[in-house]
Image (cartoon, rainbow, N blue to C red; front, side, top):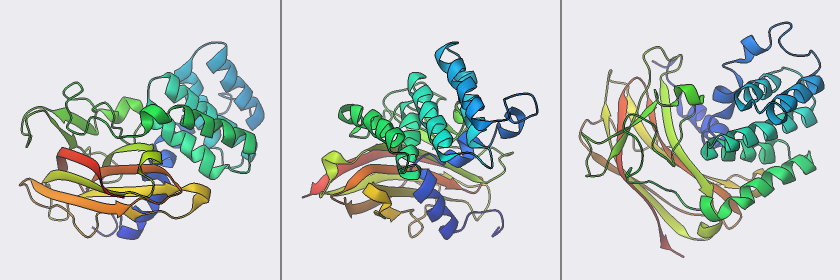
Length: 298
């Protein structure tokens, strides 16, 4: 299984760069790249591609088509940083317009962290995030009281294209530990990587300098002995500084019985975002219920 399952270093790297920002490289850029980069589909020049994509978004109002175009630009092996930053910013705006605030926030975060040298574009991304700070500064729907059964619960998102999201996590009202609902993280049998993830991301302003505790109950429906469930939490700091990170490697859940897990940390005073989630590593189904995130000390 060593060749199939991500090791701890792989998971740590992926989560630092992308789990907290949605595994953006994997699910936003790559799936459609080959089709969209076909000869004659888009102009050859990246700047012309960007202009065409903006036209599709602004003039034609075709958000879905524009997002495909922005993803195609980001998938190009060689592109000017300014073009890539602008494409990523527009992609985030399209996601926001589409109502997918979780994914849009993740992409805005990438703009800020990866294209800090494009100061104007990075400032626009930061302004978008700051405008949402009043509503994005706390996790939501931790008890899974909102949502439609069989769909991804509101407030949560999975690292997948929107059309695939509901195949990777589902709200359930039966089989749960509590009375309101729970979520199941799924790994499709045909997935190229045996890995699933559901997460939340929110601004850290209200939690800076405070000690917080993330708690949840989890259980695993394993399909083989190497399957496991893990809870993770990470903190993004300013200027790409390393913040707290725990991917749950030291406390995996392998039992079919409901099992409590918790992570406690003090949030950095320069923290920008807090992200946490639940992973299925292998082909098993991970059930999550009774999530809480609270301040336990100053």
